[in-house]
Image (cartoon, rainbow, N blue to C red; front, side):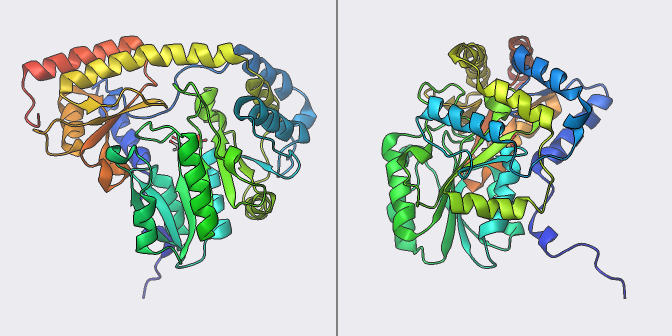
Length: 394
Ligand SMILES: Cc1ncc(COP(=O)(O)O)c(C=O)c1O
């Protein structure tokens, strides 16, 4: 008898969509196809020069290459605390309320492992970032997707959730500004979410990496939480400071929950490279002009993205935040997957099919603003050809 190699746990997930798709795009490029990737939200612009200077300066001393504290240096946590105070008017104690993370994505797994038991239910947004569901599956929890609809301004339907029963629900993921729809976080919604979580004793986690992108009023859910509320927020420098590859994020909120996450995380890694912490401190000291200049670029790109989507016959909302446009496909198209495939295989332009964010995304596609204007113009030209040759799914 041959032994089964993989765990049962592994069967609850599949390789991350983009991990597979990027390999496919690389193979197409190796065949000389020159694929344009309008799909993935990985900022193409560099961090501020002062951030890179800080990294290079701090990479030289030998002692900076040692293992680091599991919870980051005190000055690094203090920088997160000052950033939250300045940007969100939220007071966080750097000693107890903040845990630096190697990117916020790892926080999703740590939180799931720290708080979920087999059979616990987890509310995940549909459409939503696929990692919430994957992490809950790996932790043995039961997924309870909640629908987000344009007709309800992409907010959860609280009555519906209460009618369905919440006794077994342990944790709720929210993500405002929301990816992929770009819906923002209003004071009204923040209040409702915190009240809902308090009433039903649910751990509420807001994943907040997009608050500074095309958003005039960055918000933190922690503004509405009391210190003893079971509320956590994840944040990240990946999008706000063009540092996706650096892997710098944090979890903040209720100190007991933060300590629980550290209990798990300190068994998983051995701290963040000190020069990265030092440079991230400089990044968080950026003044308003940094955020403004970044957003000017995204605004210009978004106009081209709209033009591109208009040519495909898609419809979309304009008053959105974050680095994506979430677009409804034309009625003549079967679904977002067929539209994405057709554009990719006939015209070498990749756009993300909405189904990867859940069943509510089936009739949508998502394009990313992490592409320079000239590439958007090339994409528009390729689509002109596509329309001239009449693609079959439109
Ligand atoms: C909603 C959402 N949360 C978290 C992440 C992960 O960000 P990080 O780079 O901080 O791990 C992403 C990345 O695309 C995202 O879209």
